[in-house]
Image 1 (cartoon, rainbow, N blue to C red):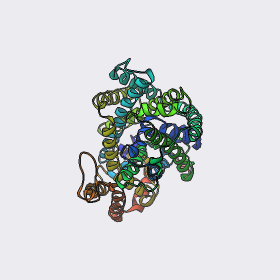
Image 2 (cartoon, rainbow, N blue to C red):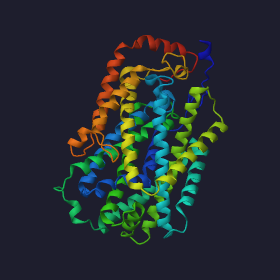
Image 3 (cartoon, rainbow, N blue to C red):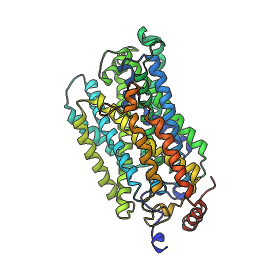
Image 4 (cartoon, one colour):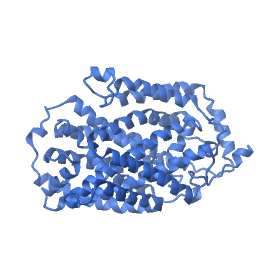
Length: 475
């Protein structure tokens, strides 16, 4: 008990009720502007690049985004309930140390996306400057520095920038979309409904789903600052609409650019397509995409910093401080910068592989985390015990680890990437159905494993542990 009482509420992760602020509608511009960047455009190019018609690519983008954003938005609802970032909430399912598995997966996403963001930024900047005035390495370095500076200023400034940028991109994308419907001729062959190709369709569908699902690891990092009385439905829909609309809109602009322009480079194709509306508009649209890329790269650095601090907290309890934030930001900066310099030559194939890997890694976790939150423990957790290495959730939780392992193993035969293709995917001609297998298997295994969990006893212990923490608002 004495050890538990030493765990302070002002940890590196928990946001006390007195410090909660903002309105739930503020989630909309954060996730809309988070999607409004060149990386999202690149996801929408995949189907057309594989020979899929524009109509079927559009359907795949819509379906994939609808599926991935559904899970992502439900993760966002957890923030106001507990005041904790997403990954810390994995401790009740995986254990105090077992949650390190999820944090490693998250770091792969943060660092991986930032590396590819840097490569895209270099391509787009060279396109805007009309040639190779600057070497890619120079552009990548200064782009990373700008994103790092944004992450360093903290949560409130990130929100202000995201809100202003959301309105700017709404105007820009609205003008482009309306003008494109009238002024850009569509290639006839790419509009045929009868030209359906199953493999490119599935690749595009699950690439869109994986991209949206990968936001799940840190949606609560921002919704946790909202007042505790924010309802599940409100936080779900404001997150869902922002992420879905922004994701679909940007991906379909990428689809259009790939269909209309002969340029293999994403940045060049987008600029050339936008210039069909009016000369010079491509420059503006591409510049907006680069600004969005800086913004989301800053968010990724912020999330990577929180994750690294949480990892350090497992080894030795940490308190909030500038020194820790700066050190973890610099570490994330150095690793992503190095990967960006290595990956710059083969962007398209490596980006597609990253999306596949993230889908495989996140699918079991998202199933376990949501099932635990809404069905097993029904939103009742002890904030204090989550930070207690010897508390009621244990150091290692066999239930979550077993469900993750079996869910991941069940997906392996369905993997379909350039690096490995499972036997079932091979028999299906390369179709990747891994996500559709991993979700139910992980969920069912976890529910069965939790049948032996004495929830009433755990809830009573959680209530006792948090009795002197803070009065929690009625959900």
